[in-house]
Length: 175
Image 1: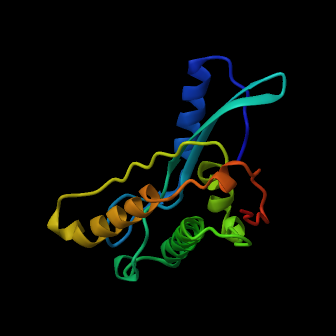
Image 2 (image 1 turned 90 degrees about the vertical axis):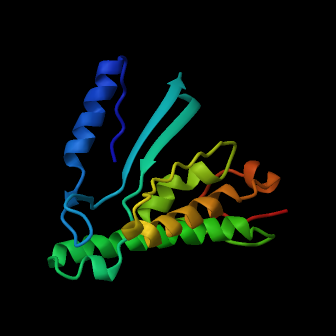
């Protein structure tokens, strides 16, 4: 990850285009062109070193089923395993937030993805999730899984104890 100071919209667009060029994609059994990595773009508004606002756009690579990558190479299988690992870590964080109680640990250290997304789930923030789904019958199972995942995020309860705590990697909840 890199942080770049910008002063004009054109500079932001250049950063986005360069990021898209660096993003890994490949062929799987399910798609001719599939994201093989997550993409994160964060805008921070700072003045005098003080953070005033932060907005993150996150495009999560889709989960990979073993059946979808069976006829592909070792690298594709490895990428799929890494994608699944990070998405599972995210799911564990969501579950922990949902069941937050005194002394509960929030497992944001589970992956680089969850470390980056931590601020989107705790602290004084608002989080919006956009789920991409397909009406095709062949996509029924992944669409249902995506909708279940989005519903789980939607139902998260923003606890006052979470909002008032600073985000740190070994965070424990106190009520």
